Length: 456
Image 1: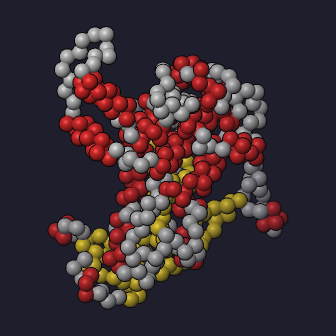
Image 2: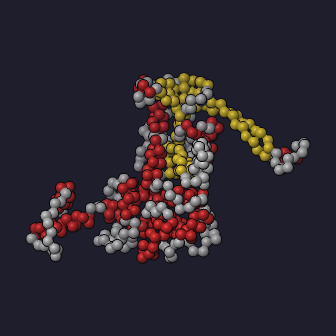
Image 3: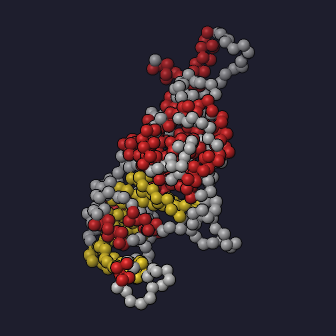
Protein backbone atom coordinates (compact mmCIF):
# COMPACT_ATOMS: atom_id res chain seq x y z
CA UNK A 1 0.00 0.00 0.00
CA UNK A 2 1.38 3.39 -0.94
CA UNK A 3 2.20 6.07 1.57
CA UNK A 4 -0.23 8.99 1.85
CA UNK A 5 0.65 12.65 2.16
CA UNK A 6 -0.11 12.47 5.89
CA UNK A 7 2.43 9.68 6.31
CA UNK A 8 3.60 9.34 9.90
CA UNK A 9 6.57 7.15 9.02
CA UNK A 10 5.07 4.10 10.71
CA UNK A 11 1.87 2.11 10.04
CA UNK A 12 -1.25 2.73 12.07
CA UNK A 13 -0.74 -0.40 14.18
CA UNK A 14 2.73 0.92 15.00
CA UNK A 15 1.14 4.12 16.31
CA UNK A 16 -1.24 2.06 18.46
CA UNK A 17 1.49 0.00 20.11
CA UNK A 18 3.53 3.14 20.79
CA UNK A 19 1.05 3.64 23.62
CA UNK A 20 2.63 0.61 25.32
CA UNK A 21 5.82 0.92 27.35
CA UNK A 22 7.95 -2.03 26.25
CA UNK A 23 10.40 -1.81 29.16
CA UNK A 24 7.59 -1.73 31.70
CA UNK A 25 5.88 -4.69 30.05
CA UNK A 26 9.10 -6.70 30.03
CA UNK A 27 9.54 -5.97 33.74
CA UNK A 28 6.05 -7.36 34.34
CA UNK A 29 7.02 -10.48 32.36
CA UNK A 30 10.12 -10.96 34.53
CA UNK A 31 8.15 -10.47 37.74
CA UNK A 32 5.49 -13.01 36.75
CA UNK A 33 7.98 -15.37 35.03
CA UNK A 34 5.91 -15.09 31.85
CA UNK A 35 8.93 -15.95 29.66
CA UNK A 36 9.75 -19.17 31.44
CA UNK A 37 10.53 -22.04 29.03
CA UNK A 38 10.34 -19.60 26.08
CA UNK A 39 12.87 -19.67 23.24
CA UNK A 40 11.70 -17.08 20.69
CA UNK A 41 8.21 -15.72 21.35
CA UNK A 42 8.59 -13.56 24.47
CA UNK A 43 5.67 -12.05 26.40
CA UNK A 44 5.87 -8.63 24.73
CA UNK A 45 5.75 -10.07 21.21
CA UNK A 46 2.93 -12.39 22.26
CA UNK A 47 0.95 -9.34 23.43
CA UNK A 48 1.60 -7.51 20.12
CA UNK A 49 0.47 -10.53 18.08
CA UNK A 50 -2.75 -10.92 20.06
CA UNK A 51 -3.48 -7.18 19.76
CA UNK A 52 -2.98 -7.40 15.98
CA UNK A 53 -5.38 -10.35 15.87
CA UNK A 54 -7.97 -8.53 17.98
CA UNK A 55 -7.90 -5.19 16.13
CA UNK A 56 -7.73 -6.92 12.75
CA UNK A 57 -10.59 -9.30 13.67
CA UNK A 58 -8.70 -12.44 12.65
CA UNK A 59 -10.78 -15.48 13.58
CA UNK A 60 -8.20 -18.27 13.22
CA UNK A 61 -4.48 -18.92 13.57
CA UNK A 62 -4.20 -19.44 9.82
CA UNK A 63 -5.75 -16.04 9.06
CA UNK A 64 -3.44 -14.40 11.60
CA UNK A 65 -0.36 -16.00 10.07
CA UNK A 66 -1.35 -14.78 6.59
CA UNK A 67 -2.00 -11.33 8.02
CA UNK A 68 1.55 -11.11 9.38
CA UNK A 69 3.02 -12.48 6.14
CA UNK A 70 1.26 -9.72 4.21
CA UNK A 71 2.74 -7.14 6.61
CA UNK A 72 6.27 -8.58 6.59
CA UNK A 73 7.83 -5.24 5.52
CA UNK A 74 6.29 -3.56 8.57
CA UNK A 75 7.43 -6.05 11.19
CA UNK A 76 10.20 -3.79 12.50
CA UNK A 77 7.58 -1.15 13.33
CA UNK A 78 5.65 -3.77 15.29
CA UNK A 79 8.62 -4.53 17.54
CA UNK A 80 8.99 -8.07 16.19
CA UNK A 81 12.11 -9.72 14.82
CA UNK A 82 10.73 -12.95 13.35
CA UNK A 83 7.61 -14.34 11.70
CA UNK A 84 5.26 -16.09 14.07
CA UNK A 85 3.87 -19.51 13.16
CA UNK A 86 0.61 -21.14 14.11
CA UNK A 87 2.14 -23.84 16.27
CA UNK A 88 4.31 -21.37 18.18
CA UNK A 89 1.39 -19.07 18.96
CA UNK A 90 -0.83 -22.01 19.90
CA UNK A 91 1.76 -23.24 22.40
CA UNK A 92 2.18 -19.73 23.84
CA UNK A 93 -1.58 -19.35 24.31
CA UNK A 94 -1.68 -22.67 26.15
CA UNK A 95 1.33 -22.03 28.41
CA UNK A 96 1.77 -18.32 29.17
CA UNK A 97 -0.06 -17.18 32.28
CA UNK A 98 -3.09 -14.89 31.76
CA UNK A 99 -1.94 -12.99 34.84
CA UNK A 100 0.66 -11.27 32.61
CA UNK A 101 -2.04 -9.79 30.35
CA UNK A 102 -4.12 -8.85 33.40
CA UNK A 103 -1.15 -7.00 34.86
CA UNK A 104 -0.57 -5.16 31.56
CA UNK A 105 -4.21 -4.05 31.54
CA UNK A 106 -3.95 -2.76 35.12
CA UNK A 107 -0.77 -0.81 34.31
CA UNK A 108 -2.35 0.78 31.23
CA UNK A 109 -5.50 1.64 33.18
CA UNK A 110 -3.45 3.33 35.92
CA UNK A 111 -1.52 5.35 33.30
CA UNK A 112 -4.46 6.52 31.18
CA UNK A 113 -7.33 6.71 33.68
CA UNK A 114 -7.07 10.52 33.84
CA UNK A 115 -8.12 10.61 30.16
CA UNK A 116 -11.07 8.27 30.64
CA UNK A 117 -13.26 10.21 33.05
CA UNK A 118 -16.23 11.94 31.43
CA UNK A 119 -17.44 13.72 34.59
CA UNK A 120 -20.91 12.19 34.84
CA UNK A 121 -21.46 11.69 38.60
CA UNK A 122 -24.95 11.21 39.96
CA UNK A 123 -26.16 14.60 41.09
CA UNK A 124 -26.44 14.71 44.88
CA UNK A 125 -24.25 11.65 45.54
CA UNK A 126 -21.15 12.68 47.46
CA UNK A 127 -19.27 9.40 47.02
CA UNK A 128 -17.52 7.95 43.93
CA UNK A 129 -19.88 5.43 42.34
CA UNK A 130 -18.86 1.92 41.27
CA UNK A 131 -21.07 -0.49 39.30
CA UNK A 132 -20.73 -4.27 39.48
CA UNK A 133 -22.15 -7.00 37.27
CA UNK A 134 -21.12 -10.06 35.28
CA UNK A 135 -21.50 -11.15 31.67
CA UNK A 136 -21.39 -14.66 30.23
CA UNK A 137 -19.39 -15.58 27.12
CA UNK A 138 -20.69 -18.72 25.44
CA UNK A 139 -18.04 -21.20 24.30
CA UNK A 140 -17.85 -23.91 21.70
CA UNK A 141 -17.27 -26.73 24.21
CA UNK A 142 -17.20 -27.45 27.93
CA UNK A 143 -13.80 -25.80 28.42
CA UNK A 144 -15.30 -23.69 31.20
CA UNK A 145 -18.19 -25.16 33.15
CA UNK A 146 -21.40 -23.80 31.63
CA UNK A 147 -24.54 -22.71 33.40
CA UNK A 148 -28.17 -23.73 32.99
CA UNK A 149 -29.75 -27.11 32.37
CA UNK A 150 -28.41 -29.78 30.07
CA UNK A 151 -30.02 -30.08 26.66
CA UNK A 152 -32.15 -33.05 25.59
CA UNK A 153 -29.16 -34.91 24.17
CA UNK A 154 -27.25 -34.45 27.44
CA UNK A 155 -24.67 -32.09 25.93
CA UNK A 156 -24.11 -28.53 27.07
CA UNK A 157 -21.76 -25.87 25.81
CA UNK A 158 -19.30 -24.29 28.19
CA UNK A 159 -19.18 -20.67 29.18
CA UNK A 160 -16.86 -18.14 30.80
CA UNK A 161 -18.13 -15.41 33.09
CA UNK A 162 -16.42 -12.03 33.49
CA UNK A 163 -17.23 -10.49 36.89
CA UNK A 164 -16.64 -6.78 36.31
CA UNK A 165 -16.50 -3.53 38.27
CA UNK A 166 -16.50 -0.11 36.57
CA UNK A 167 -16.57 3.48 37.76
CA UNK A 168 -19.68 5.44 36.82
CA UNK A 169 -17.57 8.27 35.35
CA UNK A 170 -15.54 5.93 33.11
CA UNK A 171 -16.32 3.43 30.40
CA UNK A 172 -13.69 0.75 31.01
CA UNK A 173 -13.47 -2.04 33.61
CA UNK A 174 -11.60 -1.27 36.83
CA UNK A 175 -11.51 -4.86 38.08
CA UNK A 176 -12.28 -8.14 36.29
CA UNK A 177 -12.33 -11.78 37.45
CA UNK A 178 -12.84 -14.52 34.85
CA UNK A 179 -14.46 -17.74 36.08
CA UNK A 180 -16.72 -20.58 34.99
CA UNK A 181 -20.19 -19.46 33.94
CA UNK A 182 -21.59 -21.72 36.65
CA UNK A 183 -19.90 -19.65 39.38
CA UNK A 184 -22.50 -17.69 41.34
CA UNK A 185 -22.13 -13.92 41.33
CA UNK A 186 -22.35 -13.43 45.09
CA UNK A 187 -19.34 -15.72 45.67
CA UNK A 188 -17.01 -12.97 44.38
CA UNK A 189 -18.78 -10.04 46.04
CA UNK A 190 -16.41 -9.94 49.01
CA UNK A 191 -13.33 -10.15 46.72
CA UNK A 192 -13.96 -6.89 44.86
CA UNK A 193 -11.42 -4.21 45.88
CA UNK A 194 -13.84 -1.33 46.44
CA UNK A 195 -12.10 1.59 48.23
CA UNK A 196 -13.44 2.86 51.53
CA UNK A 197 -15.72 5.86 51.26
CA UNK A 198 -17.26 4.69 47.95
CA UNK A 199 -20.70 3.62 46.80
CA UNK A 200 -21.38 0.48 44.75
CA UNK A 201 -24.56 -0.68 43.02
CA UNK A 202 -25.37 -4.19 41.77
CA UNK A 203 -28.38 -6.32 40.88
CA UNK A 204 -30.23 -9.07 42.79
CA UNK A 205 -27.60 -11.70 41.92
CA UNK A 206 -25.32 -10.39 44.68
CA UNK A 207 -27.38 -11.23 47.77
CA UNK A 208 -24.88 -11.83 50.58
CA UNK A 209 -25.87 -10.26 53.89
CA UNK A 210 -22.49 -11.01 55.47
CA UNK A 211 -20.66 -9.22 52.63
CA UNK A 212 -23.11 -6.30 52.93
CA UNK A 213 -22.27 -6.01 56.62
CA UNK A 214 -18.57 -5.98 55.74
CA UNK A 215 -19.29 -3.10 53.34
CA UNK A 216 -20.90 -1.19 56.23
CA UNK A 217 -17.90 -1.89 58.47
CA UNK A 218 -15.52 -0.59 55.76
CA UNK A 219 -17.54 2.61 55.16
CA UNK A 220 -18.80 1.43 51.76
CA UNK A 221 -22.42 2.08 50.82
CA UNK A 222 -24.35 -0.09 48.38
CA UNK A 223 -27.65 0.07 46.48
CA UNK A 224 -29.35 -3.07 45.18
CA UNK A 225 -32.76 -4.57 44.44
CA UNK A 226 -34.78 -6.53 46.99
CA UNK A 227 -35.60 -10.15 46.25
CA UNK A 228 -39.21 -11.26 46.57
CA UNK A 229 -38.44 -13.79 49.32
CA UNK A 230 -36.48 -11.29 51.42
CA UNK A 231 -37.43 -11.48 55.10
CA UNK A 232 -36.89 -8.45 57.28
CA UNK A 233 -37.90 -6.78 60.53
CA UNK A 234 -39.04 -3.15 60.38
CA UNK A 235 -37.23 -0.98 62.94
CA UNK A 236 -38.29 2.50 61.83
CA UNK A 237 -40.48 4.21 59.25
CA UNK A 238 -38.90 7.37 57.88
CA UNK A 239 -40.82 10.43 56.76
CA UNK A 240 -40.94 11.05 53.01
CA UNK A 241 -40.15 14.63 51.87
CA UNK A 242 -43.04 16.49 50.25
CA UNK A 243 -41.23 16.85 46.89
CA UNK A 244 -40.69 13.05 46.68
CA UNK A 245 -44.15 11.78 47.61
CA UNK A 246 -45.12 11.32 43.95
CA UNK A 247 -42.13 8.99 43.46
CA UNK A 248 -41.37 7.32 46.81
CA UNK A 249 -43.95 4.99 48.36
CA UNK A 250 -42.15 4.12 51.62
CA UNK A 251 -38.77 4.58 53.32
CA UNK A 252 -38.02 2.16 56.17
CA UNK A 253 -35.12 1.06 58.34
CA UNK A 254 -35.10 -2.73 58.54
CA UNK A 255 -32.99 -5.55 59.97
CA UNK A 256 -31.90 -8.60 57.98
CA UNK A 257 -30.76 -11.83 59.62
CA UNK A 258 -28.30 -14.25 58.07
CA UNK A 259 -26.85 -17.65 58.91
CA UNK A 260 -23.93 -19.28 57.13
CA UNK A 261 -23.13 -23.00 57.37
CA UNK A 262 -20.09 -24.72 55.93
CA UNK A 263 -17.75 -27.67 56.38
CA UNK A 264 -14.00 -27.57 56.86
CA UNK A 265 -11.30 -30.18 57.55
CA UNK A 266 -10.09 -30.51 61.12
CA UNK A 267 -6.68 -29.13 61.98
CA UNK A 268 -3.92 -31.39 63.30
CA UNK A 269 -4.42 -30.02 66.80
CA UNK A 270 -8.16 -30.76 66.70
CA UNK A 271 -7.48 -34.25 65.39
CA UNK A 272 -5.10 -34.92 68.29
CA UNK A 273 -7.95 -34.35 70.76
CA UNK A 274 -10.49 -36.31 68.75
CA UNK A 275 -11.50 -39.80 69.79
CA UNK A 276 -12.28 -42.66 67.46
CA UNK A 277 -10.74 -43.99 64.26
CA UNK A 278 -9.84 -41.74 61.39
CA UNK A 279 -11.24 -42.41 57.90
CA UNK A 280 -8.89 -43.88 55.31
CA UNK A 281 -8.42 -40.48 53.69
CA UNK A 282 -7.23 -39.06 57.00
CA UNK A 283 -9.49 -36.02 56.55
CA UNK A 284 -12.24 -35.42 59.09
CA UNK A 285 -14.77 -32.74 58.24
CA UNK A 286 -16.39 -30.58 60.92
CA UNK A 287 -19.53 -28.47 60.48
CA UNK A 288 -19.53 -24.83 61.52
CA UNK A 289 -22.17 -22.11 61.63
CA UNK A 290 -22.01 -18.34 61.83
CA UNK A 291 -24.94 -15.93 62.09
CA UNK A 292 -25.48 -12.21 62.35
CA UNK A 293 -27.76 -9.26 61.66
CA UNK A 294 -27.52 -6.43 59.17
CA UNK A 295 -29.23 -3.06 59.54
CA UNK A 296 -30.19 -1.37 56.28
CA UNK A 297 -32.68 0.88 54.55
CA UNK A 298 -35.62 -0.33 52.47
CA UNK A 299 -36.95 2.11 49.84
CA UNK A 300 -40.02 1.44 47.70
CA UNK A 301 -40.80 3.65 44.71
CA UNK A 302 -43.27 3.72 41.85
CA UNK A 303 -42.05 2.47 38.49
CA UNK A 304 -41.90 4.98 35.64
CA UNK A 305 -45.34 3.72 34.64
CA UNK A 306 -47.32 3.59 37.90
CA UNK A 307 -49.69 1.03 36.43
CA UNK A 308 -46.80 -1.47 36.42
CA UNK A 309 -46.46 -1.33 40.21
CA UNK A 310 -43.55 -0.58 42.51
CA UNK A 311 -39.87 -1.49 42.84
CA UNK A 312 -37.96 -1.90 46.12
CA UNK A 313 -34.31 -1.15 46.88
CA UNK A 314 -32.03 -2.14 49.75
CA UNK A 315 -29.18 0.14 50.85
CA UNK A 316 -27.02 0.91 53.86
CA UNK A 317 -26.90 4.63 53.04
CA UNK A 318 -29.02 6.38 55.70
CA UNK A 319 -28.08 9.96 54.71
CA UNK A 320 -28.64 10.33 50.96
CA UNK A 321 -32.21 11.20 49.88
CA UNK A 322 -34.26 8.27 48.63
CA UNK A 323 -34.84 9.66 45.12
CA UNK A 324 -31.07 10.05 44.57
CA UNK A 325 -30.45 6.44 45.67
CA UNK A 326 -33.09 5.30 43.16
CA UNK A 327 -31.19 7.18 40.45
CA UNK A 328 -27.97 5.47 41.60
CA UNK A 329 -29.49 2.09 40.84
CA UNK A 330 -30.76 3.36 37.49
CA UNK A 331 -27.14 4.13 36.57
CA UNK A 332 -26.40 0.42 36.94
CA UNK A 333 -27.64 0.05 33.35
CA UNK A 334 -24.38 1.68 32.24
CA UNK A 335 -22.47 -1.56 32.73
CA UNK A 336 -25.06 -3.47 30.69
CA UNK A 337 -24.50 -1.15 27.73
CA UNK A 338 -20.74 -1.58 28.18
CA UNK A 339 -21.08 -5.36 27.91
CA UNK A 340 -23.25 -4.95 24.82
CA UNK A 341 -20.72 -2.71 23.05
CA UNK A 342 -17.81 -4.96 24.00
CA UNK A 343 -19.54 -7.98 22.51
CA UNK A 344 -20.52 -6.03 19.39
CA UNK A 345 -17.01 -4.74 18.70
CA UNK A 346 -15.16 -7.86 19.87
CA UNK A 347 -17.37 -10.78 18.82
CA UNK A 348 -15.88 -13.43 21.11
CA UNK A 349 -17.19 -16.34 19.07
CA UNK A 350 -13.88 -17.50 17.62
CA UNK A 351 -10.99 -18.25 19.96
CA UNK A 352 -7.37 -18.91 18.99
CA UNK A 353 -7.19 -21.87 21.36
CA UNK A 354 -9.36 -24.58 22.89
CA UNK A 355 -8.15 -24.35 26.49
CA UNK A 356 -8.90 -22.11 29.47
CA UNK A 357 -5.55 -20.37 29.25
CA UNK A 358 -6.03 -19.26 25.63
CA UNK A 359 -9.60 -18.10 26.27
CA UNK A 360 -8.63 -15.98 29.28
CA UNK A 361 -5.73 -14.45 27.36
CA UNK A 362 -8.00 -13.46 24.47
CA UNK A 363 -10.54 -11.88 26.82
CA UNK A 364 -7.84 -9.82 28.53
CA UNK A 365 -6.40 -8.69 25.18
CA UNK A 366 -9.88 -7.56 24.11
CA UNK A 367 -10.08 -5.45 27.27
CA UNK A 368 -6.62 -3.99 26.53
CA UNK A 369 -7.70 -3.12 22.98
CA UNK A 370 -10.89 -1.51 24.30
CA UNK A 371 -8.88 0.61 26.72
CA UNK A 372 -6.46 1.74 23.97
CA UNK A 373 -9.37 2.66 21.68
CA UNK A 374 -10.89 4.76 24.47
CA UNK A 375 -7.59 6.62 24.86
CA UNK A 376 -7.29 7.19 21.08
CA UNK A 377 -10.85 8.52 21.05
CA UNK A 378 -9.99 11.00 23.81
CA UNK A 379 -7.06 12.34 21.74
CA UNK A 380 -9.07 13.11 18.61
CA UNK A 381 -10.79 16.45 17.97
CA UNK A 382 -13.55 14.86 15.90
CA UNK A 383 -16.37 13.01 17.67
CA UNK A 384 -16.27 9.29 16.86
CA UNK A 385 -18.41 6.45 18.11
CA UNK A 386 -16.31 3.54 19.38
CA UNK A 387 -17.66 1.18 16.72
CA UNK A 388 -16.79 3.55 13.84
CA UNK A 389 -13.40 4.29 15.36
CA UNK A 390 -12.56 0.59 15.59
CA UNK A 391 -13.67 0.04 11.99
CA UNK A 392 -11.35 2.84 10.88
CA UNK A 393 -8.41 1.40 12.84
CA UNK A 394 -9.06 -2.09 11.46
CA UNK A 395 -9.12 -0.85 7.84
CA UNK A 396 -5.99 1.29 8.29
CA UNK A 397 -4.12 -1.19 10.49
CA UNK A 398 -1.12 -1.64 8.15
CA UNK A 399 -1.44 1.66 6.24
CA UNK A 400 1.23 4.38 6.37
CA UNK A 401 -1.27 7.14 7.03
CA UNK A 402 -1.22 9.36 10.11
CA UNK A 403 -3.78 7.85 12.47
CA UNK A 404 -4.72 11.06 14.27
CA UNK A 405 -4.55 13.12 11.04
CA UNK A 406 -7.11 10.79 9.50
CA UNK A 407 -9.33 10.62 12.60
CA UNK A 408 -9.36 14.42 12.97
CA UNK A 409 -10.20 15.00 9.30
CA UNK A 410 -11.03 11.81 7.34
CA UNK A 411 -12.19 13.86 4.31
CA UNK A 412 -8.84 15.64 3.88
CA UNK A 413 -7.54 13.54 0.97
CA UNK A 414 -10.85 13.71 -0.89
CA UNK A 415 -11.03 17.49 -0.41
CA UNK A 416 -7.64 17.85 -2.08
CA UNK A 417 -8.94 15.96 -5.10
CA UNK A 418 -12.05 18.19 -5.26
CA UNK A 419 -9.93 21.34 -5.04
CA UNK A 420 -7.71 20.08 -7.85
CA UNK A 421 -10.79 19.50 -9.99
CA UNK A 422 -12.08 22.99 -9.26
CA UNK A 423 -8.70 24.40 -10.23
CA UNK A 424 -8.87 22.58 -13.55
CA UNK A 425 -12.31 24.01 -14.26
CA UNK A 426 -11.39 27.60 -13.37
CA UNK A 427 -8.15 27.57 -15.39
CA UNK A 428 -9.66 25.69 -18.29
CA UNK A 429 -6.96 23.05 -18.03
CA UNK A 430 -7.18 19.31 -18.51
CA UNK A 431 -4.39 17.66 -16.53
CA UNK A 432 -5.54 14.12 -17.26
CA UNK A 433 -4.63 12.28 -20.51
CA UNK A 434 -8.22 11.15 -20.85
CA UNK A 435 -11.39 13.19 -21.25
CA UNK A 436 -13.53 13.36 -18.14
CA UNK A 437 -17.31 13.78 -18.09
CA UNK A 438 -19.22 16.29 -15.96
CA UNK A 439 -18.43 16.11 -12.23
CA UNK A 440 -21.29 16.39 -9.75
CA UNK A 441 -20.08 17.08 -6.21
CA UNK A 442 -21.98 16.58 -3.01
CA UNK A 443 -23.55 19.81 -1.73
CA UNK A 444 -22.11 19.19 1.72
CA UNK A 445 -18.61 18.91 0.23
CA UNK A 446 -18.99 22.19 -1.69
CA UNK A 447 -20.30 23.95 1.42
CA UNK A 448 -17.33 22.66 3.40
CA UNK A 449 -14.88 23.91 0.74
CA UNK A 450 -16.48 27.34 0.59
CA UNK A 451 -16.32 27.61 4.41
CA UNK A 452 -12.63 26.67 4.38
CA UNK A 453 -11.93 29.19 1.63
CA UNK A 454 -13.64 31.98 3.58
CA UNK A 455 -11.61 31.02 6.64
CA UNK A 456 -8.37 31.28 4.66
